[in-house]
Length: 38
Length: 335
Image 1 (cartoon, chains in turn blue, yellow):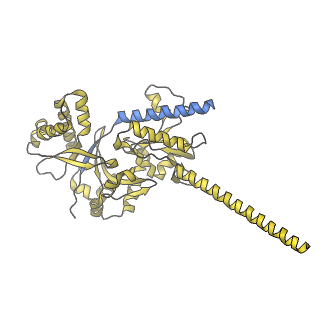
Image 2: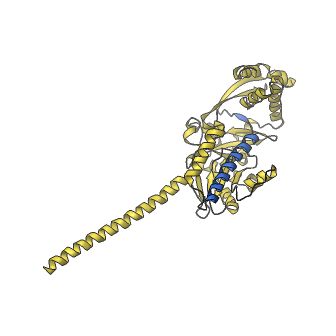
Image 3: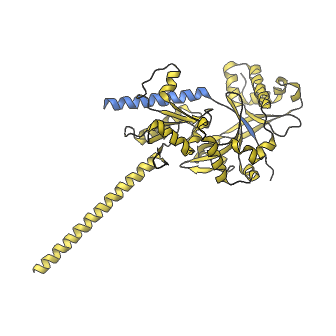
C-alpha cells in the first residue's frame, strides 16, 4: 500500500480563543448574578 | 481587493518569486484537505526538487490577512516565510513512516462524530460519547504554528499497530503533566488586566501547552483527574471549541439544559465552523473516573428514579391487590 503523507501547517488562533472565552465568562457571570438575585 | 479564487491563483503563480533560489524549480500545487466538521480547506504545497514531502499551508487565514491589510506582496512574503521556517525543522518521510521513531510524537484530538462522517471514513478513531478521538503526528514549529500529519488508515497500516495501541501511545504523550494546562478563567483575565471575582466566573480552562486542539485532553483520564484537584470531584465540561474545554463545578447551581443552551448559542454565533466541537455538555466524576454526556446522565438518573417509583407503585398496587384479596377471603371466611 502506497502511503501518501500530508503535512499540514496550522496557525494557532489566539485572538479567536480570547473572544470565545470572554463570551463564556460573560454568560456564566450573568447566570451567577441571576442566582444571586434568587 | 482580489477575490479568494484570484488570491489562490496569484499565490500559486508568484510564490516562488518570494523564495530563495533553491526553490526555483519547486513544484507548486493546491491541495484540498478535509478538516474538522467536514470543512474543505485549500492549502499551497511547495515541493522542492528532490524532496518527497512538503507542508500544506492553508491559504484562507492568509487571505483574511490580505483582506485586512490590502497588501498582497506582504501576504505572499509571509506564506514564503512559513515555507522556509518549515525547512529549518524538516521531518523526513522515513521518520513519519517509522512507528518507533514517531510514537513519542503521536497526539490525540477530539472532533464531533456526527459532523465529521466524511473525515472519519478516512481515519482510525476511538469513540468517546458523541466525539471521536483522532490521531496525529506533531512537529512543533516556531511560536504560533504547528506542522501536523494526520494518521489515516494507510499510515496506521504502515505502522503495523492496532487502534488500541495507537490510542494508548497518544494518551501517554498528551497526558504528560508538562503538556496539560489548567488555568482559572479569573487568573487569565487578571493577566490581561481585567479583574474578576473568581466566584463570579467559576470556570477553569483545560487545554494543552500550545493551546491548539487541546480539547483532546478530555480523552485523558489523567488530565481530568488533575483538573479535579482544581475544580472539585464532580464537574461539567463545556466544549468551548476543539482547542480547549471549560470546566464548571457541579454543585447544584447550574442546570445542564441551561449550560447546553449556552454552548449551542456560542457555537452558533461566535465560532468558526472549523472550531466547533459539540453542542452537548459533558460531566466527569473523578471518584468513578466516568465521563458522560450530562443530559444522558441526568436522564439515566431520572429513569432510575422513574423506575424506582414504578417499582414502588407496582409494589403498592400488589400490596393493595393482596390486601383486597385478603379482605375478600376474610369476608368469605366470615360468611
